[in-house]
Length: 56
Ligand code: SF4
Ligand code: SF4
Image (cartoon, rainbow, N blue to C red; front, side, top):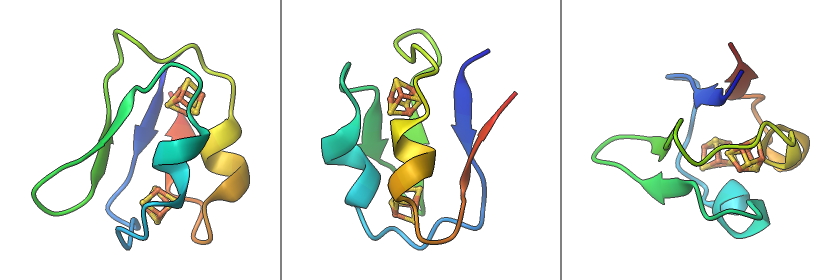
C-alpha cells in the first residue's frame, strides 16, 4: 500500500529529497504523497522527525 502523510507533518521538507520516485511534493499545508507513484519503500518515514508518513 502507498504511504500517506498525516496532519502531524511540520513541513520540514526532509522527506522530499529521500523519495526515489519523486512522489512527495509540498502541498498547501503539509507535504503530500502521490499514491500513484509511491513504491512503499519507507524512506520518507525513516527520515521524518514526527513520523508523519504512514503506510495504509
Ligand atoms: Fe517515496 Fe518511498 Fe515514501 Fe513512497 S514510501 S513516498 S516511494 S519515500
Ligand atoms: Fe512532513 Fe515528515 Fe516530510 Fe518533514 S519529513 S515534510 S514533517 S512528512
